[in-house]
Length: 154
Image (cartoon, rainbow, N blue to C red; front, side, top):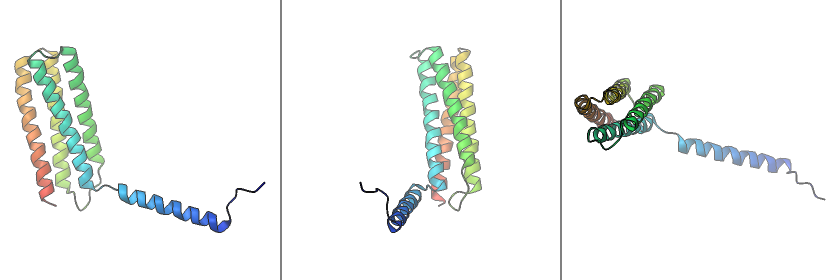
């Protein structure tokens, strides 16, 4: 019966090949700070859009109170998580401290507005939901402007 062990030069070659593959994978998957910021910005924008759609549907009576409350609560939680993720992004030459702090502030505002909409739904206050949806739309526009200006500064 033959041994399945590799010779020393064969083992060394296999180890070198594995290290090369790992190095290649690591370099290909490395994102820049801008890509990380864009990803988290898009996610925050999507959650704000979800809050907007649910609030609007609730005003029209198209979704039940409980569904609207639960969805808005989840959107608020996810926006706060996005803020935490953005906070952890390392600053680099392609992301300024001002861009990062501006984005953190905007995402926090989105979370706060979403929470206010949830509270208004819980109170069954349609006029307050309408008002907060307008404020949320303004925050969404601000985050879009911030995203565009940070790209232009690169």
